[in-house]
Length: 124
Image (cartoon, helix red, strand yellow):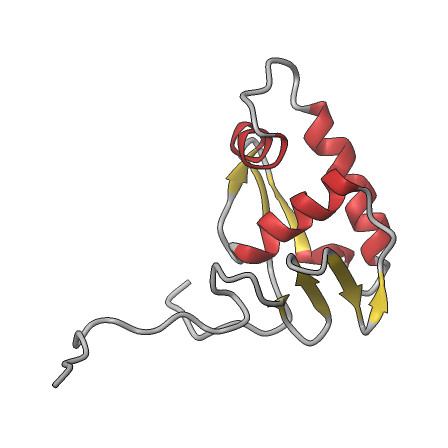
């Protein structure tokens, strides 16, 4: 007999750290197939743009510093001014288009976060 932990809530399937598709109805990322879509249309992203979008979508509403993004996406601790992340974020926003570019939010003096169109209920 198995007993569920009373305080454990399983992750929402679209936001879990799984190899399957991530995101919501508007912005979807499939890491296994290396495909990103907006409203069902595939985006033409570079490798690093894809990895950056995947990281942000995988962790919705979570603020990521530029240093944290560099370590997570580029795979090393970046020594520099953080402009590399800023440039990639700007390109991602452009490719997401007018309707969805606001989903990547700048948190002044901290970094960036991704806000999906629909998300699991949380206490944010």
